Length: 323
Ligand code: UFG
Image (tube, rainbow, N blue to C red):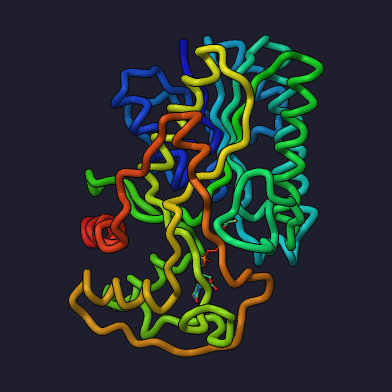
């Protein structure tokens, strides 16, 4: 029996595949390589290049492979782009999920772990954020992920499918093997952009907003290592296969760092000064997002191993220096 990883050539998907294979699972990857990279695909995984919205293609994969459970990462995930191209996000994310659930139903596959996001909450009334807080997304990206969660809920009612939606905060870092890490084109995420300065790939890092109601005026985020995310996905699929109930679970370290604190930590890790430019706010950025991660500990027995921000940034730094 195999685990199907949709989006297994992407950042978090590839780290999950490496961990699954380390734990002796057979892994099948589906990825259209729209945002994924062939270089991130584990050599022992079976890879099908194609788009999950193509139901003939996807049904073909389910026919050929003996799939026991699905881990779904194959979605668009940039807040800013989603504001400009909302229909692309509805098509790829929501329609993609529809085709996937339909295919799972046709092939009697009952378990799905889904890559959801803190963006489902919108601007929280307080932090840390608990899973039962209101979900009022402030952008189409968060809105589509929330819609995808609800599709799984109704499929559970109707078809007895079981799901875990993992709402992650800010994924970061790289595999300690130095072979895989965060690659996006174009890159928009804070830590890789900060590290591009000492890598001499950019002159300076722009800080988006210095007048937020936070300790130093810059946004606060909860940075969670990608290997800890991978570990949670595998615990979640095992949890479902062991017969436990569907759930929605936050994944974060439970600690917030400001943009300026991240830059300072990166200077300490790289031992180089990082030139900083102070800019206006970026549209759609909430001031402070920090997870309550108690539910993940209680339900999945998950505890993040990478709790030190310097160690997290060090793994990313090692990867970029290895490339
Ligand atoms: N930032 C800068 N300069 C940059 C890039 C980012 O100051 O050049 C700031 C942002 O304004 C934000 C923080 O750094 O305050 C983190 O920004 P990222 O773009 O790295 O991440 P986001 O918090 O915007 O979004 C990430 C994921 C989303 C997910 C969200 C959930 O990209 O998919 O976390 O918290 F929905």
